Length: 308
Image (tube, rainbow, N blue to C red; front, side):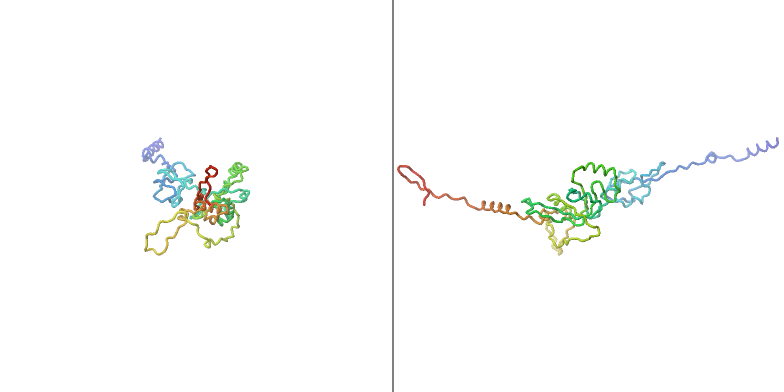
């Protein structure tokens, strides 16, 4: 009996635990993710003040969690304020990621039978040639010339340089190609040379000559006449400037060139020259004057004859 009393006294004298002490605290696990603190515009580098870190109870694998992963990078898509930042805003597999500064990607159509484009692969280096056929207008004689040297191929059909080939898409593209010999090829061209390539494609037949990547030989382009710009710059009104203003590659591209700069100048054919001379002759010649006529009477009948 005494033992029972001692147990009861011990229980009554022990301090009571608060409800908080009796129930262990549960710590909720959260995971960070980045959101756009301000609207992000494509083409502009992301700065630290454009992003913020938020947390979620669910872990996602397709989101950015560290600001250092996005700061300084240039998105290809615009992102609204509050939206989660995901890798697709940079689209790492875009063709534009493969283009160097100062260059442009230009799509051209090439005949497989003429240029052997079935052997070409993204990343190959080629020389671009074009055959211009006489048309008695802009091209006086049939000619072939190199349009651009050592040009890098970015894409051949569905294949893109630097990307793993999707076999399924490649088969679909080949099936769609069928027996059509024309194939789309994208090449990387200096911005100042884009006009030359476009004119060569429009006025001639393009062909690609594959070259060894270690072959760095280039034509001495400075020894040949500069293409004549279609648009002329405004007169320089700053009389204090002694040196002429330099023309940037972007200015050259905007100024444009004529077909004469690509094919070396129109040389009139014999027929064209004859037609021109004939037109000039007709314009300058005077109408032939008729000889004065004299009325004569013979055997009672009046007749008119040219005066001798």
